[in-house]
Amino acid sequence: QGVPRDLTHYNNALRACDKSDQHERALVLLEELKGVAKPDLFSYSPCLNALKKAGRWASALEIVDEVPLDIRTKYIYYVAMEACQHLPGQSDRAAALLVEMGDIANVQ
Image 1: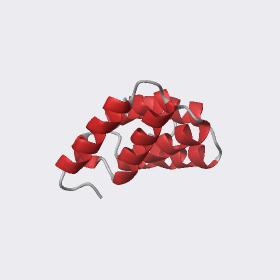
Image 2: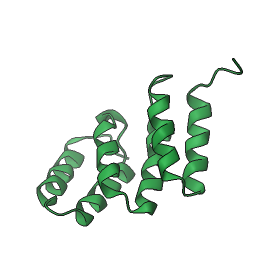
Image 3: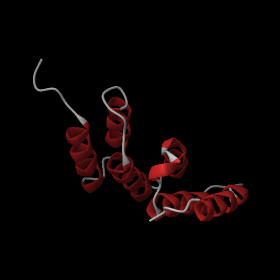
Image 4: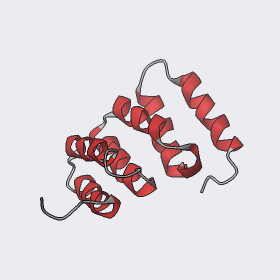
């Protein structure tokens, strides 16, 4: 049985994955977390950062699509637009993200 894991435990593990360049493990942990609690900004950001450092741009865009609009930050959009730069045929998506970012009043 052990100790029940919660959002804080997963977020700490995701930060550790980011710091140790374990992007694959971060993806696994994020997926596990979805069965335990609702991921938050502190779940998505380290996972995206690990993917960014690994050059896993397609995976990063998939994760960005999962991030609820109400918790997207400038950093989330930055990673998404950077991913669009690295993937062919994504200029329309980058433009749409820029518009979306302007439409959301609370992007910080």
